[in-house]
Amino acid sequence: MRQLIPRPHFLENLKRFREVDVIKVVTGVRRCGKSTLFALYIEHLLSSGVDESQIVHINLEDVGMEHLREYKTLHDFLLTKLQKDRMTYLFIDEAGRCPDFEKAIDSIYIKKNTDVYITGSNADLLSGELATLLSGRYVEIKMLPFSFAEFFAAGELKDKTLAFENYRTMGSFPVVVTQLKSDMALADQYLEGLDNTIIVKDVVARKGVSDVALLKNIVRFLCSSMGSSVSIANITDYISRSGRKITQKTVDKYVQALANSFLFYPAERYNIKGKNLLKTLGKYYIVDSGLRNHLLSSIHTDIGHQIENIVYLELLRRGYRVNIGKINEKEIDFVATKQHAKEYYQVCATALDEKVQERELAPLLKVSDNYPKFLLTLDFLTGDYDGIRQVNLIDWLLKAE
Image (tube, rainbow, N blue to C red; front, side, top):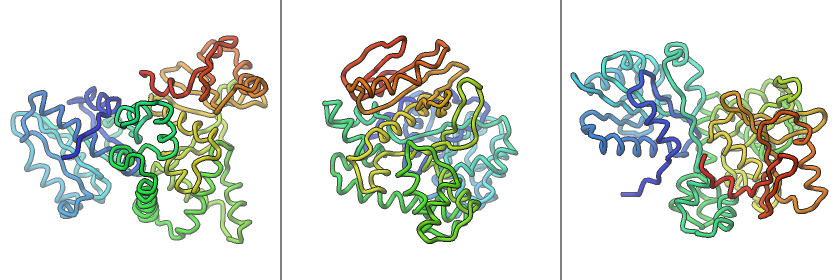
């Protein structure tokens, strides 16, 4: 039996909502660890005194559960599993594999003594009838592959700098971290299969995308443009220059489908002085740096943008809403907001050169409020510059939230 690697942040989230009268919806890219999270949580329930008969766990991706991919059959099956006088914990992996599953979930959810948990690998799970039927009655737990802290704890390397290099190059999907270790060739082969699975199952099949070659071109464009402002218009222009006839409407549909599959995350620009979101020229970050390296066949170039991507994902893990900051004509990499408090981040590989340091600090120095401001680099040099803290990126990733 394989060892389950702890996912403390996400596990604590589930524990906090135990038996709270909401449906717990765990979303995230395919193979990021959603099923393992359920297994960890079920272990916790059993260790806290819950009887096995109170726990029902089905995975609708399993061929053996194929007969449950009809909502009435699913409903009737779950109904037979409910305990009469004590809580029943219902876990349904990849609920979206059952058309109209929300009808079954809604009916079961309102039964006495039920605690319902579902997972999905596509944002469409919460964009249809589930959101309408259960408005205000579900909570979304957004899951990502391993953080660097989880990667370091699960790995064999004790040198944090070497471990981070593996994290940056090979990525953070659980199978890569726990089973493939440092085997770059096997990791690349696994990521190839994962990429194809996400594209076929979560984009093409779900969204009716007909041109897979075009979709993969857009994926490569977004990967190569990471850290740069992107618009639907300039993606369309890029594709058109290669000789393809394509409309902005089609490109927008494909980009939205990629975001819905949790393969890419859009970050909007935020006007710091005007305190409003700007709807144009945002950025896109990929869910895993190893996957990007695989798609671009490159691990050594563009390190600054790679670590920028890692910081973006880490801020999401820590529960922040993340935007790109605009102040006058300058840009701040990230404005991270949580519970009405803000933090500002600049990210670069090194700021040992005085001119580089001045360039990175300049936008932060223009921000007049007193919220924390950070310059994250791979340098071991740390310091404080007019209230801006320069911090080693690896140490920041390893610190407790």
